[in-house]
Amino acid sequence: PSVRGAIRLDRNVTLEADNTLYLRFKSLAGTGLTVTIWGTTVSPVLTHLAPPTLSILTGAAGTLTATFDGPDHAEGSLQLHSSDAAVARVPETVPVPAGEETISIPVTAGSPGIARITATLDGRSSMSHVAVVPPPTQVVGLAPPVLPLAVGGAGSLTVTLRASPSEDTAVAIAAGDPGVVILPGEQATVPAHAQQVAIPVLGGIPGTTLVTARLGGTSA
Image 1 (cartoon, rainbow, N blue to C red):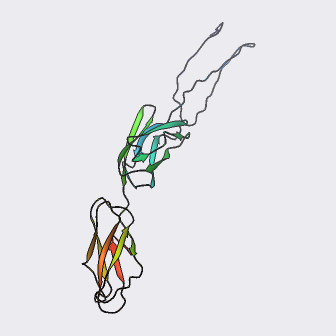
Image 2: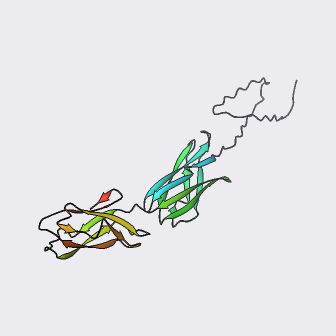
Image 3: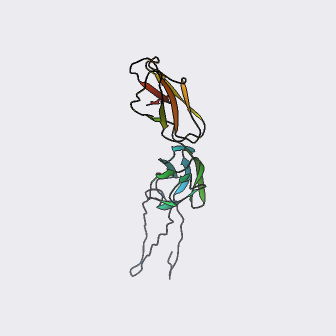
């Protein structure tokens, strides 16, 4: 039918990843057609934060992974919060590149404890817990390297740990030849919150022997 003046036709369509628009019309000479297409930006949708619990040693670094729904979203900015920054620190924001389905979130461990990390984007949130644990107690030294002893004479060896344990810690001690040096027993106890303990020894028969201190797979 013949139409005079301007008319407006609105159509709503669902856009896919790739779209093709076809227009077919007839017009009289001197008439024109204006096509305007409006589109909305698809924001990234946060689906989850993984792993649910991340364990890190004190002073070390770890990584959380945020996952987003759909590969065709626009860029965004992920907001991050730690319930205890003294335990686990995260950046305040991490950019989400357009189309990325996952991004990595750096985590820095502080003092031992548990912190809750919350990631938020456009009102959606997901959480993970970070458990910061102290490094395993290790033997790092037995001094002095050489201890001269007279037969029947007394001396002392010192065991040193890498870090102070939170409770009394037993260190296994042994002499290669127990007749040459007499130890007070098979264990020496490092007191809680201390890094060293002195081991009294006595000289036995003349000779040379090796004394070893062992703890959790480490020795000196």
